[in-house]
Image (cartoon, rainbow, N blue to C red):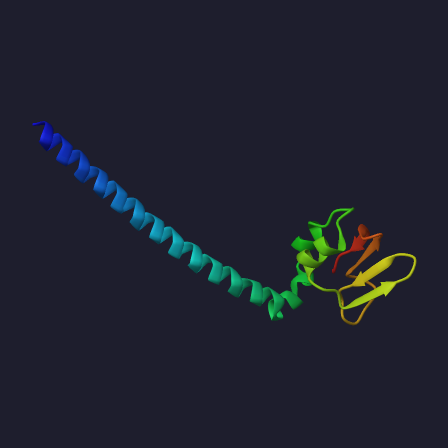
Length: 116
């Protein structure tokens, strides 16, 4: 009877171990697939899709005073024009300075005007 219990325990342990190995292999493959997907999405952001991010009013509402230029670049993308005077101004509209701009002082957001 003890031998039967021992064999049953070993069999169950083997199945659990086998299942864990299969789960680990599945998770590793899932991570590889997700990393590939993230890479594709990052390439899209750097390409044409990112060029129009600044037009999204929801993204402009996420801007907060004190955000860095790097924070803004991640949020809206690269500006069309940068002026360095008393303050740094990033313009996002390609043909007009009347809207879609952000002021920075010492790399911190002071204010902005969103596209209308």
